[in-house]
Image (cartoon, rainbow, N blue to C red; front, side, top):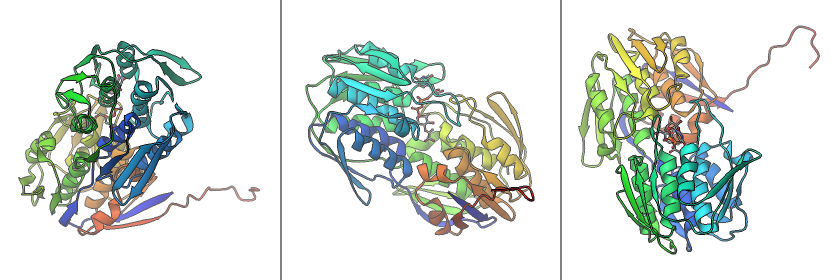
Length: 432
Ligand code: EPU
């Protein structure tokens, strides 16, 4: 396991290339289970989560070939329909093989994903949606077991207590693509990653209207062919680097970026006093002054993304005054609060809300990453802090950011990746 050692206080200057979206890529890779011919994906980031899904797909009979950022996926054997716990527990997004397996093979056994550091993560809406299309679903030994003849189109409502579900919408959309008749998904997740999946499925021959809107209409087809697709740029990675530029009082260009995917983030960055300008191929961020506080509430797209809440909180730690940050998607997604506090941040948490009182400076400290986005927030805090910050357990970061330290160093950061050798203290005279 590695850790990052960050010497803070260096403004970032330069251009950071943005990779393809992890969260668009994962369901798209799962969708290739539906295809009768090979699919080619361009813009696939080199991430641990992508590799983990690749391993799972291989177990499910898909040949996965990677050349740089291009993946070729081709189904070669449809006999194994079991997504095992050992693989699913490494990555919750594995649940998105459920819809495609069921629709194409009539049977799926997928280990029920557990909760994780960002809180409880139920899949009841996925299961309800697939059951509405006619699947018979039961739980057996911790696995979801789903069966069907051919799925039938239906009206499916995907809203839940915390809004629509992104991967739930993806699962139902993929399953409905091969169902008999028309499916209407109401209260569908509108995230750009869902729209990208709809575009991918349409390129395979699906008939989907309204991807990226709250009502998706899917006319089921008999079969889907292969296709070639380029994944959208990662809006969360772009938002993270925007916060990195802002927190170091730097000037950074990011490209390619779909700024229309980031309007809520741009709005909040401007609210704290950061300059954000669209360029021909991306965006430029510039900050050279004392930040002012701003409130932010995470919401389903097009609202402010929960996946940038921790990074934005790191930024508000240095704004002059009180910022109120409310988490409406994952109310327990606040593990970064305690770690930021170790660096001198002043944060009071009350239920799903954190009140951040800006401080003059953050002070470098050893901190521990708890999940992907919390880890990114700690790196940002380290970039701005006085002195040295050590972020351990960075395997979380490698799940979602490609070589983050190299890319930040290329624009002026001072970050070293070193092996994290944890010394276990022993009593004098103890026998090992
Ligand atoms: N929910 C339910 N029932 C369900 C499904 C979800 O109640 O059946 C609840 C969740 O507990 C949560 C809310 O609905 O409160 C939204 O969860 P959602 O299902 O949309 O999350 P997800 O699809 O599992 C994706 C991203 C997450 C991102 C969320 C929200 C992928 C692979 N993951 O997860 O990304 O936080 O949408 O935008 O696309 C990350 O990249 O760090 C990450 C966690």
